[in-house]
Image 1: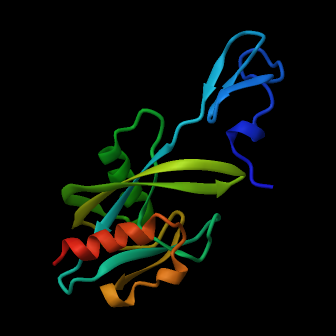
Image 2 (image 1 turned 180 degrees about the vertical axis):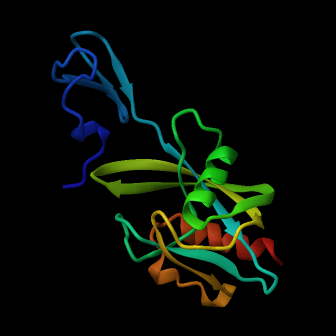
Length: 173
């Protein structure tokens, strides 16, 4: 069974009473204390790096969900963290690099299936590596540069990656 906030969370985090009603999808309301839990899309920040040969950098996931599948480097933002700060943190954690020339690219909605389904709002940036040497670390087991025609579309970890990479290919023309 696929779980979402609507059927995964059973008890109010404020008073501990069982949830008795839902206002609408993604909002759980406690009939006892009137607390409302809003399940919003969780923000992520990711980078698209292009090398001098026109290839894009993808990373292989070292953890579930989708362990062993290709992804863009990036991850979930910490509570209250601005997306660019989260992007910089993730690149240092996952690849050991700092960034330069960061430019907003796009946003993509998806579902992250791990424990329960969470919608994600994936904020994507184009960036260049400023300093550091690429090293697979944290939740990345490997990295590889792919020419547009060689992107492993059948081994991409999440559905949002395919339209994002198509948009990247189109933007290069």
